[in-house]
Image (tube, rainbow, N blue to C red; front, side):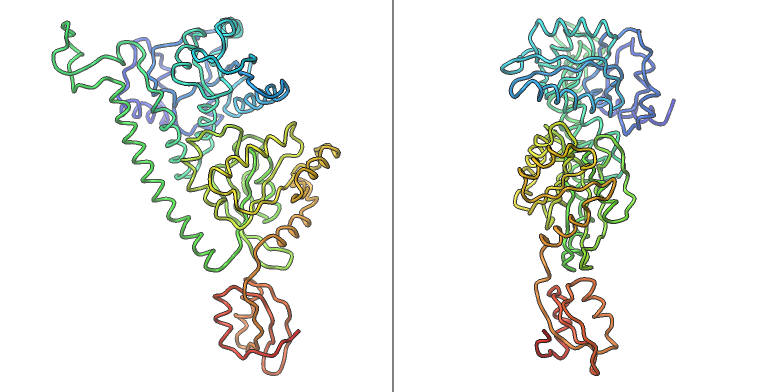
Length: 488
């Protein structure tokens, strides 16, 4: 058995898993951890075999088996085009998770059914579609309550997954750093905790003492039900993950503090997933950050140094992409990472201008920015992928967003205008000095060029006459030299 399988079995043992005698070897070999798409593909079921729902622990919701799926959406408001666009986005998410999308259904309702998410008739129609296509998973375009999950699974007889669980699964696949993996696991555990429930007697059996009715062997124990044991152990794991994330975030805070002391302006790149944020970072800095035409390819923030047209330095931070209805658990778990956005001097809000509905993407991103406390940070909207967008639609977007620029990270068009606008919006060094530096202090001259804005330089017999705007710390060092008359 593989190392991934061993990890999964260890995890199931840790949470007190009570499996059924008929459990398959394929289920035992499944790994709930950070599987790549290739690993997931190697675990696909054989098409046409039984897809009956088995008696499994709810803890296995971490181990989503997404192979052949049918999508289900409830259209409560907006236009039909918006509802269909949301379902197409759900299909992209499912494909990113390694699934094959077979079909999709939408029901028009004032609100989701409290029992089965969709009405009883649509649920029966869905069950027929699942049986006809051989699907093994139904993905709902919304967050379902535990009761809705349980009752809908009872009708369709296959696993039901909601949008939140699907996004969490994608994050679990793409997390690479230690902190990223811990953040994703924390979000998964927080999602799982209120959804624990027992399936069959093995998970709801009360243990402890002499059970009424003569329960006999297997019914005596510490006095906890199986669900209570799972809840207790998951709460313990959540507390541990929170402590670990808090410790790991200290290093990032130290790095931010060093940049603040040097007064290097910071720019955060934020935006909808797959809008081209990493491509833009690579174009502006010459970095080699992973670029992939898939959702949530970037989870771990990448900070790179860049220079403005004047030569002044600033930092660019690539962040995780946002999406409509981004799970609250993820926002909470990634809060330490998203602080890079809330503490930036400027946000480059990257938008895929070739998308069918870019305005809704802008709204979704701004909702998350407000949630993480970045509402008051200056924002510059960057309409990316201009080479693939319709010119008329692009003009309409610019009129709707006056503080915006149009670029193409693929071709490089518009990047000069973007940098010029960034330089205009970023805070400038606060103190202006006019000094004569001895030729032996070329290091201070170099720092003025590197960290400040040099207005004028003139070489004299006494040294280099310099007029510049510099950070306060550098101004204090330059203050020890002879201040000249105004050189202007």
